[in-house]
Length: 128
Image (tube, rainbow, N blue to C red; front, side, top):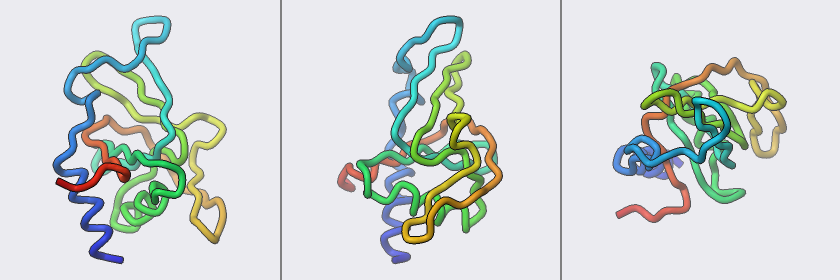
């Protein structure tokens, strides 16, 4: 299991999210742009890690592993991405804020906080 975790974390170190590189987040009304994704997210010292992948790919499991190593929950299953100036802020939908699913256990409660998107991990993308 540790090898797999390091492998997934390595993906985060080389794959920068397109929103971090200036591509627009789909627009909404007002002066901020916002979209929601099927993803999980954690924060490390205020820097957000967006975890993407198909259902069953291990998004929640990776988020829980990172939380066990000191990361804070941002969101699980759905993540709001909101552009504020040049930053993209990650937050949970209100209905699931502070909840994360542990496979075989159920929903767990955890403190959450928003984070600025720094990197994205795509669990469906093969390593280079």
